[in-house]
Image (cartoon, rainbow, N blue to C red; front, side):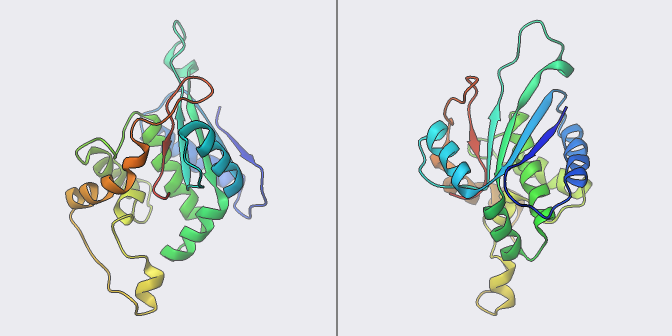
Length: 199
């Protein structure tokens, strides 16, 4: 079962987000349960400090679970995601879309980490898969893609012009920005945590 725990005020429809999470969960090829915590910058910062040794908030943290021997895959717990609603709100504004859309982008990104992908260490495979699933799930630019792009808010204000980069260049450019998280840190259940796109 997929659970979304709303610990802070949020105007996003929990049933709609849960439906999206189920679709993205299946599209990412996951079978076990995923728990999602939508919370504050303060709580994500606490989790980031506790499990990764990073004393700052980020947008999404992924905590893959260790498989339980003898349990069928569909009864396993795949892992947990923690998403900062405050950071998601700021990023939604920067990129010119709704909070609900931003949460969907962060959920997809986190699910791909739970599926074992890691844009910090791969050769662009996660960026390619995220772009493919983003199109399938009708989402705007992926978290990895846009980490190398100019936010739409700055383009609209005339402060910068948009940049378009090939996917391989996006993956190469995004990787150094993410290098702090390489390897992650153990979570409560012994899994490794990974962070999303912001530090």
